[in-house]
Length: 256
Image (cartoon, rainbow, N blue to C red; front, top):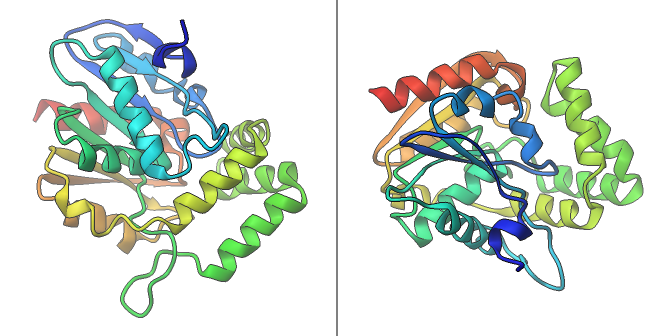
């Protein structure tokens, strides 16, 4: 049987009254949670899965991927809706899923979410111009592996994390990753954020090479029931580089 759990390689760890669903970001898979998931599996049911790549026109939009997330949550949901944690692209899918089905989660944790990657000057600085995006897409087309290794080092200044990210992205499907990159960079979540009604924690890094601080801060400022935690660490992947800090931020929020 090729159900949602099978297609997306759903994995469950631990056990407990609360369920956490972890949604990974661009170019990686559920292994990106290897440093964080076991910390919560001590007292939570932790659900991991892989975002399904574009196949025969499937997942042509970010909303299609958000519907996939809703399908996964429905397939693993117990009595209570889960806490859904998303990183970067995964966080964007959480926002879109919440706009499609507001009750799919009990809480959202949005890690390193950009409301919009592209600049909308003079009022908004997303960190990238249209020319930057075209350069990224061109580099992916020219030599995907070289681009992946460079991008891994760019998003994570820690050498070991950057190397892991680069190797993982390099092993992904180039066509699907390129498509997702363009979708993510052209998306504009700013009109959607105020419609998210779920209790939400926004986690940002003090120094993020991908998201300017002002853009990251807009997430919590735009969602009605949101709180922001800024980790005093560099990089776009604190769940890999500083998992203890991420764990503490999430636990403190959920226990408040």
